Image 1 (cartoon, rainbow, N blue to C red):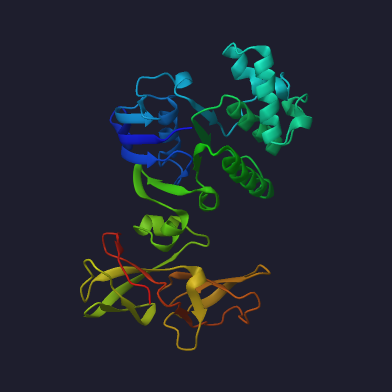
Image 2 (image 1 turned 45 degrees about the vertical axis):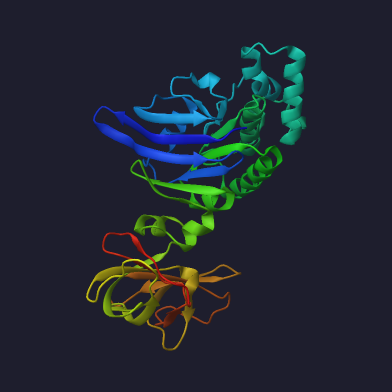
Length: 363
């Protein structure tokens, strides 16, 4: 296995910049997830690493070797596609070993590699079946097995679970996490599903319009989003983002108010703090809202979802803006009821007019 480095990687189609100068370091054995909305460039970036497309400028290194001009088959990477790309007329055994056969690997060595991949993926009983006889999850195992037998330096996954139903996706996420731990492999995984990103990644790379918005561990991005885009994209339910005004600044203490907000106080950290009268955006995770008689936020509830382990409520604030909160399982809330909510100490996040996060201190 190997580390991977991207330096100023750019991809343009004519005058259209799709990847806009990405710099990234991926350590040996890391599980890194590229996440972002459709069209953000995450799959294109993966294909550039794989060598399936040429970069416009910049450098890509795999295991300390510059691979800009190296053919895809010689880069030491293996890619697992969303579509599985299995040959329907071949058995699982032949599908898994097909790449080795093309590489003229001796038959006995090829058979041993296929059997080992089947053991790792717990699919020995499937080896003599055809793809049509397999479930979606089993087909995905075969596609992963085909990558494993190549013994690559880097595994690349392009939205591999998007064709599976919700329950099977959960099972396959656990399978991929187990596989990563067992192989100790460097893995890069593309998804638009931030739940997959949060549960699988050692490190997440958030992309928007071909640019990196933030890189960090899942909980780092969840607790300290760098800007409004990351704040709204990472987390489920999504972070509440509310317009507010700075009503006063006393040293590092900032007081906020607005159409939806009675006074809320936050404490600034080192760095530039917003000035009195400045418009800002207040970010609050739904799990950080707590019922309180004197709460500064008072939505009128029009949606209640009782999920057994928790209750999700949503409603309109005075301005018409929406607010979502996650409460205890049997919280006594009712539709069309105004519920005063306070913010858990140190949980508020603040974003300047530019969209960038304002550093705050936890209480």
